Image (cartoon, rainbow, N blue to C red; front, side):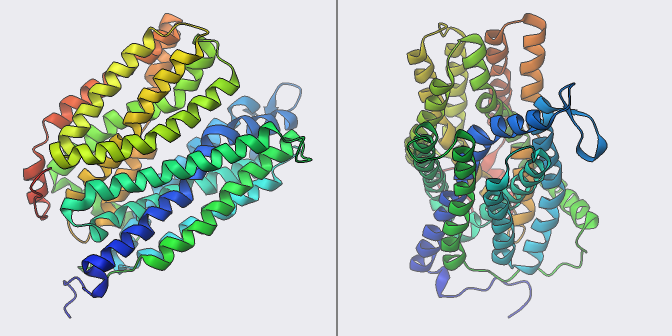
Length: 448
């Protein structure tokens, strides 16, 4: 068998691919609880309180001798984790494509993240620095693992199945996030009944996400398989590998055009997710229980939204369905501007609208990008995709903050994010997707 060929075995027949797809779904089921329970709900407030407990009289902590306001420590740790991930992803992606051994790398990244998350059980007292280190490790490992996980999609699903397979993966993830978040909220709300203090309950919630992540990762590691690399390349790993990836992507300008559109509208999506609670608490005067309930509603409806948009893509194509979702995002934000203060029902309606378009927007963007990746370079290109997803989403929060600073109104700040969906729509509408798929060397599906 030549180096440039792709090895095919019985796992590449329809039954084998379906088995791999089922295993692939379970990684989303495994890791999504980290994003939901740990990063979105519990860790930020808890780590901030630990840092404040350790702070000096001026409200500063001093990691490695650097004075940092306790209230900023969590944000800085998240930013550092993004930097680590952005450096690591193209290097790991290049190695995965060069060797064809994605599964051991996925296992290493997943269990590093799961172990760091489980270790958050020991985050008590004034151990803010331990919390920061565990957050950086877990968040960076999650990004690397997701890049490897996403890169399996072109290998386990034929072109005509990718929208549906990607949508089911997102649905599995949101379903798991909802299930674990409900259990965590029961434990947290009734911690006295379980004989736990409030801080102990939070630590159990954090650690349980790591245990869930590690346990269910066994399923994809058992059911997915490695393929031989299509091409053996001589490029050494490290910075030269990253530079080679960038040069190669420049040879596919239409793929880069899609990435640019995705970077813009995904920046808007991520900013809405991160700032909606600020809008709800500061502008609408809603309590913490209402905000957590809204997060849970988003998770539940994102399951239905991902599956429904996957079905729409069968009829209208992924590109057209994504464009429709960007229109829906725009209308949802415009409606959010007019929400009355102190009315949680209308905030839940807004959260419902976000949930219905959230999962589908992300799932179909992933499946559409999978068609634009040159064969044999899946992990490298998905490292750039994941960097767009996690490492480049800073313009939205900046615009949100600047708009509030200039106007003093969170309503103006939230509606300012419409610009990302309008520009993203315009950029995506200009991408000739069929030509882009052909130029990447992939078969063009009948409906895309």
